[in-house]
Each structure stands twice: as structure tokens, then as C-alpha cells.
Length: 213
Image: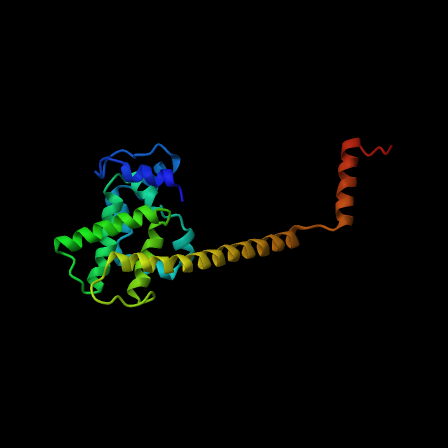
């Protein structure tokens, strides 16, 4: 985790307007804008109703290139990433039939969003969506009483253990696939030693005009 990047994100005071200029001059920030467009576009694409899609393709979810929370925030400005996280959390409250409209609960949701951004800013947006999808599926236990930020933070620790195992499995699968493809390529295009010597001799004849020394 890049602590300096997180500190910069949490202390930024930039505009959150959809047509504001990219906040960071880094190449990755310009790439996010080019790929996903305005803040409204990216928030719509990664909305809570699409959480279930993240379970259907774990490779794309973990390794597909959706921006991390911190890069999301630095690209679109203070407030956008927080608001997106709050919407994901609010969706969970609705799912659990918890009242989310009173001032105290709104404040709790806001603080939970900031805690996720501060402590887990290295997670990408689809990973967060996968976490909430699994939470709603009862994967990390059933909340008792009023849902709280503490329960969400406890659950994400369980998710991180799953994440490490699943990413390792996906990376090993990629390496195995790459090795198999390389072997198939070599098998298809490899030549024998005799063939190689013949090609070498032909190349030498062309170079010397057929005159042997």
C-alpha cells in the first residue's frame, strides 16, 4: 500500500465536478479518464446493482484493470470516491432492511466509507463490489441487530484472506497457461539440429558465393 498516495488522496480539496480536469498528471490518471470518462460514467458503470457480475468472472474482477480506490479518488476529486463507497454501503443497508436515513446512520455510513478508503485504498473498485456481493450472500456471517461499520470492517478482513488465495490461484493459472502455449509454439516451430546445421550451411554458401575455404 502506498501511504503517501493515500495521504494525498485524503487531504485533497479539489473539485468533484464531472467536467473538472484530471487531478493527477500521472499517466495512469489520464488513462482512467480516457477509459471510463466522467465521474458520472464511472459511477454508473460500477454501480451497486452490478455487484453480482463481479462473482461471475474473478479474473476480470481481480486483474481486469478497474482503478483502485485511491486512484479513483485522485482522478475524479475529493468526494466522488467517498460518495461511491457510501452508495455501495447504503445498498447493503437496504438489503439488510436497516434504516439508513437518520442522521446518525448517515454519519456512520460516511465514516465507514472513509475508513475503507483509508485502510483498503489499494483495493480496486470491482474488488469492493465483490466484497459487498459476498457480504449480502451471507458469506461472512449474518449481521445481528443494527448493521455497523465495525461489522463491515471485520468482514472485509475475511474477504482479504479469500482475495489472497484467489489471486494466487489466478496468477498460477496464467503462468501455467503461458507455459503450455510456449511449449506448443516451440513444438510447432522448432527445428532439429540437422535442419539447423543445413540452414547454417546454406546461409554460409550464400555469403561466400559457394566457395569453401
